Amino acid sequence: MAAKLEDIVRHLDGLLEVHLFKDYGPNGLQVQGRGEVQRIATGVSATLAFLERAAEMDADLVVVHHGLIWGKGIERVTGVTARRLGFLLSRGMSLLGYHLPLDKHGQLGNNAGLADALGLPMERRSFGDVGGQDLGIYADLEAPVSLAELVLRVENRVLRGEAARFVFPYGPPTVRRVGLCSGAAGDFVEAARNAGCDAYVTGELAERAGELARELGISLIAAGHHATEIFGPRRLADHLRNAFPSVQVEFFDVPSPL
Image 1 (cartoon, rainbow, N blue to C red):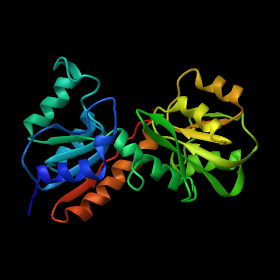
Image 2 (image 1 turned 30 degrees about the vertical axis):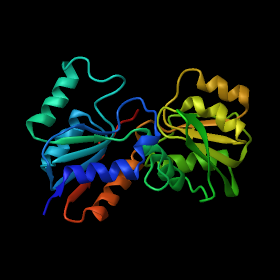
Image 3 (image 1 turned 45 degrees about the horizontal axis):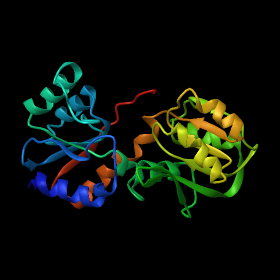
C-alpha cells in the first residue's frame, strides 16, 4: 500500500517547521515525481552516486539534507545539475530537501544526533544565530574530560575510528562545557566561546578558524562536513518508517572524507 507524496511533504514540512527558517535554498519539495510513494531513500546529499543507490531500491522519493536547489534557484540546467535532475525525472523520483530545519530539530536533527554521539547531557542550550534561529548546541559534561578524551570520542563515535580532520588545542586541557554545530559552522567558534565553551566541535572550517580559536582560547575540532551530518537523514528514515508503516524506507550513506 502506497502513501501519497503530498501527505509526506505536508507531514515533514510541519514536523521540521520549515516556515521558521531563512535558509540558503528552498526546503521541502524541490523535484516532483510520482504522486504515490512506496519506497523512500534518505541521505546526506543529492549526488548522482546517492541517486543511483536510491534507484537500486526503485525509490519513488528521496529525502536529503543537501538538495539540488540553492540561492535564487536553478539558472541553467547544464552539467552536473542536468545529470542529477535528468536522473530523477527519468525515473519519476521526487526529491525533498531539508537543510537548516534538519540541523536544528531537537530529536531528529544533525546537531541532536551529534550531541548524543558525544555524550552531551540532555540539559542542552542553543547558540549560533542563523536567520533568527540558534542552530548550535552546548552543554556541561556530567564529568569533565581531557581534550584528548573528547577528541577520541569524536574519532570513535563520529568518524568510525578515523583521525579527526583538524584539532586546534587552544582551550583548557580539561573540558567541562562543549559546544557543537554540524556542517560548515566554523565561524560559530566565537559564539561558542562567548557561551563559555572550553571546546567546540563542527564539520568543516574556513581558513580563519584556527587563528580565531587561538585568540579566543578555545579548542576547535573539525570532524568533516559529511560525518557530522549523517545523523539527521538516518533518524529521519527511522521516523518515516513509523509515520508511514506501509512504505519501505532506507538510509543510504555515500561516505565523503570532506
